[in-house]
Length: 544
Image (tube, rainbow, N blue to C red; front, side):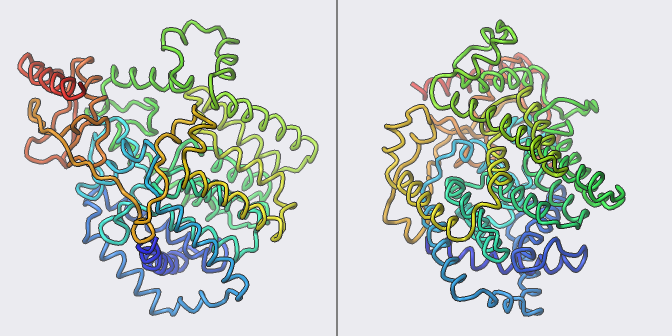
């Protein structure tokens, strides 16, 4: 807790300084210290994204960025803006921050933390954006802007990767400063995302803030669209947000598209980033083939697509079984999965239906456009991979629109207090959820409270690996463990080694002397097949 507090007290002033820089260049979305911080997050994330094409986000990049942010923070005396909170507000913020720091200090338990978040950040800090990185591990092709943001602060400002905890502190500053008390109701649920740099947290928080600003009558179309596209760049399943802002701009504010040019420029950078790392404009969809030599192997993409379909059904059916479903079977089997997933799926459909009826009754353009945007996103998710984690944001949005006028400060604080106690109990005593909801798999990876976390956040260390070479590619594989979070890069996840060998290919360096010049896949020679088979045999023997 204590070290996260120090990290937050260091990073937030830097973001305020960067927010001042961005507001001087493009204006402000809304006035206040929280507005500056959010502008700082967007600004520095986009700058680091561009820089990471050419350089790693190492300690030098972090030092320069921090010094620049602190310079403006001190030069313009921006610290004075932190004093405008009343004593009552300061007490509420302090109490909430204490809860946030406590929950953020628990061990990470989201599996993507080990297989996706940490490996991505390691690559960014050591190499930056590597051309064709998805040929090593398909998930690395995502390179979310949020992980670029985390990587830039991971060398010494936030070595424990608790940037999501910092974001929750910023969220409470926004809530109190803008007096939008319903956000307190969401905060306890979001505490579950505070231990890892999960992109789910920033997209939910930013989307709720943008939605709040739209409903409140914010007419800064240019920055609203910039923020919306930023959210999409963090996680493309949030496509509904830029669609909503676009509809709001054209049909409600009746502004010209020229006000949206900055947002489209960010969208262009997003596409270039994905093409550079993945070979296609939007990960993981193989649409927009430019014939690039570093795009993933079609067979690997096919295996990934089949796996996504099986994940839709919580791995309870084989791909062959799913292919035999009738249209009705696709829907009914998805709604009747064993465990908690089916309950979430049913609630998702019911929420959309209820919200559609609500929009029809209200007959307000903005609510209608929100409904259209959510349905557009939901249909796309249902088509590609209807996993519940891809539509979690829909629940928050619908709840916000339905109840934002109902929750005043008193009601929100009561809900926040009760739910915070509930979720803190789950994190501290995970056996509660492990017994009551055994199908909630993430609960089985929660470890409970340890007194050491009062000083420093709990982190895992493994650092056991073997080194292999196939062709000109020398790489590391974790020893008797399926993920590469603590393995020196270049590291390859065992799962993808099996897929590559099955497809008869293996990743190779474009230049055997410089990994930064890119990764491609090549058909294996007879000698390389022997080398790859030795790797597989070694993995299988250690698994035993």
